[in-house]
Structure formats: structure tokens, C-alpha cells
Length: 275
Ligand SMILES: [Zn+2]
Ligand SMILES: [Zn+2]
Image (cartoon, rainbow, N blue to C red; front, side):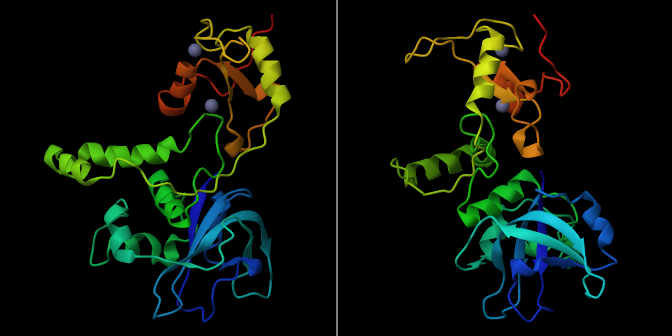
């Protein structure tokens, strides 16, 4: 599952309307070969001079159709994920400060390099940091949640990385001025509705041992004394992996964290050893 960007440029006289799909010209067809059903696309438009760039929303690719008589015959059919009431006006200047470089740094600012080019439409999957920045604009986090507690940590760690790179004095100054009572922000999260029977079956199979490092679960649950292991999907649900006993493995928290954040130890073809 990948995230793309698509541009609804000033040559369109009207607001982007996802119900009509996103049209791609015959010449740009080959860009669509790496776009799949289930992928996501952020659409940014620039059709109102007085407003500037707007984030229209985040959409899911439902199908790619062909309409012979259309000027843009390849129709990427979309469903609305973000369900915004209004388009979000983007602050080019502020976003340019946080976006990573996007190729040559010329006379355009970073925002323009990323989002003001028709040529970048469906060109290649967006980097995690760009996805995080756009989701932040939508106040939407953790789309396609994983099986690990707190998967929004990946996005949070991007901020930590940036903080680590600051000069010590600057970081200390920021700390001094920061509130020690973080503000609460409401976020929407998409979660897979996982099957508890799969988890139960895998836990029974593991017999209290991590199926990766083969050591006993590190502690027992206070609630019922059950041995604490986490059930991980070998092929992630977000990559169309199955929520099945065969695609799941019981891991101790260390191995699980390593699988998500460190060097991966479990081969995608891993299968439980029959006992
Ligand atoms: Zn382990
Ligand atoms: Zn996992």
C-alpha cells in the first residue's frame, strides 16, 4: 500500500471533485502501472488565485478505468478517506520549512517542488516524512494502523530526529519555552478490525514462547496470568497481508519492536514449525 500525490492544477476551472475520479492523460498512462487498488492519494489543487494551494483530501484508489472519449481517458476512481467538510488551505511558506528536499533546489520553494507540478502526479510513492506532514494537515494519523501498540511513533520519531539534529542550546531554549502540559489534539485513526480467534490460535501455538527468539514471554498479564506476547502479521495488513493464523507470529515485545523499527529478522516466507 503506497501513498501518492496528484495535482489538480489551475487549468481546471472548478474545484476537484473526487466523485468524478482523477483523470490521467494517455501520455501519462505508464505512471499508473505502479498504482494499485487500495493505494492512497493526496490531492492538492490550485484553482483559486486568491486562496492558493489547497489540500482537497486523502482518497483511496478503488479502480482504474478507461473512458475512450475522455481527454483524460484513464480514470482513477476514488473513495473519500478524509471526509473533509472543506478543503484545507495550505501554508506554502511554513510547509517549505518542514518538507524534505525534493530534487534540485532552484527558484521554487520546497512546497512548490513537491506539490506544484503536474509531473509529480502518481510519479512515485511519497516518503514517510511527506505523508506524515500531509496527514498532519488533515489531523489524521495512523491510517492503516499496524499490529504494534502506538504505531504513530514512527511519525513522532521523525520529530525526535529533527530535535536530535538541533544545536544543544537551541533545543534547551525550546524546552525552556515549551509547555510541560501538552495540549490534547483529537485525531482520527483507522484501525483494522482484527480477528481475535487468529490471535488466540497463534498464542496457543506459541506455547508462551516467542516464535522468533524462542525465549519465554517476559511477563504475565496482571489480569489473568496469561503470558504476554504480541501477535504480529508477517505480511502487514496494510500490504494486503491476511489476518490469518498462517500470516501471524507470536513475538516477545523486543522481537516485535525490532521487526517494526530495527533490522527485520523474520523472513516473509516464515511458517510455524509443526509440532
Ligand atoms: Zn523474541
Ligand atoms: Zn507487528
